Every structure is written in structure tokens, then in C-alpha cells.
Amino acid sequence: MLKILSGELSLKKGQISREGEINVGFLRQDIDFKKDRTVWQEAESVFERIKTIEKSLQEINEILSERTDYESKAYQKIIEEFSELTKQYHLLGGYTIAENIEKILLGLGFSSEDFSRSTE
Image (cartoon, rainbow, N blue to C red; front, side, top):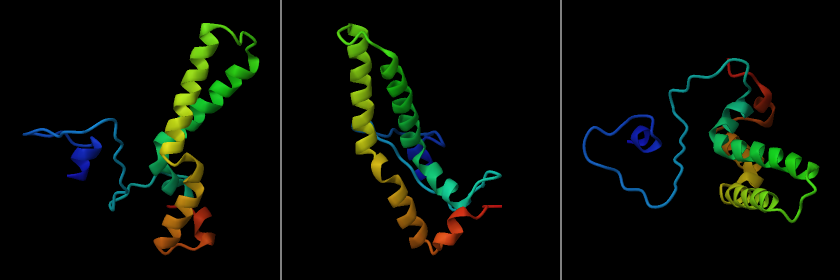
């Protein structure tokens, strides 16, 4: 069922009703680790949506730092996009990713020293 809710598998019969925009994330128990990743990086991969938003915010910041047309509609549109992304970042817990990853890993029995170990 989690695979269907996450979009990994499609539904053969019936329908799924979702209210608003939702994101479903779960950590599979049959993990296929990617090469050259640490335990921390694997745990961090669950937060891909937040990382994508974070990258977009950095790109917009760079754009804004070069612009001087503060009164233009184009500038205002960029500000609105930045504001919406900042709101999403906050709601998804972007400011507490590191704290959450640490709690999760420690809760799973990893030590702080394990965080930088390779998953291979």
C-alpha cells in the first residue's frame, strides 16, 4: 500500500482520494544503497523534496543579488516565487533536517561515528 501511496506502483482498481498537495515518504526496508554514500547521505536522501527547494532558493538568491529592477513586475514575480518556496521549505521542515536525521539515525541504533561510514 505504501508503494501505491508514494506513486511507486499504480493502482489496478479503485481510486485514491487526496486532499490538497501531499508528499508521501517512507524508508524501504529492502534498501538498494547507492555507491559512495555515507549513512548520513542515505538518511538525507529521504528529504529530496526539501533539498530541491533549498537549491531553488539558492538560485533565486543569486538572481536577486544581480538584479536592480526592484519595481518591475518580473522582480515582484521572483519575490513571490521565493516567498512561496520559503513557505514550503519551512512547512516541510527544511530548517530542522540535520536535527531530524540525527534523531532518526540515533534512534535506529547508529552512533555519531557511524554517520560518516560508507553504506557499502
